[in-house]
Image 1 (cartoon, helix red, strand yellow):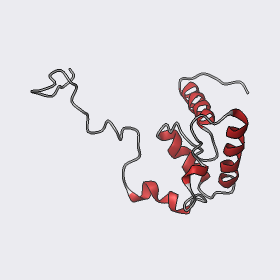
Image 2 (cartoon, rainbow, N blue to C red):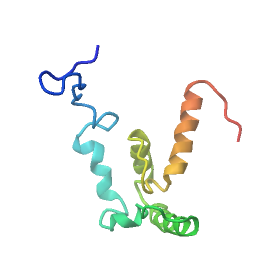
Image 3 (cartoon, rainbow, N blue to C red):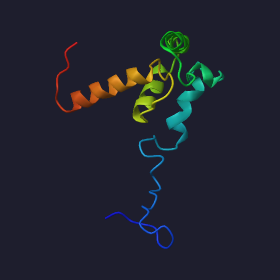
Length: 119
């Protein structure tokens, strides 16, 4: 049964304390220290997060710029796994775009359910 808040706003579902952090790694230093080793650590985040509504050619160029930074990053795999675990839907993480990560997650879900994926 869904818990609700009492008084004003009767029937409003009570906010689950884990609602906003569900799926995130535990807030322990060791779960995030890989970020200190990232090539992008001191860079402007705008490089990795495209402007809203970027068109195909511009979008591809901006994504390629971000990916070029990622390709030699010593923590590219940790970054990718973080983005997959948190289902990050924006920006270039671990050398991948949101669309590429969605495909990886879909592949992993299919593999976990026993389906074979043809290449």
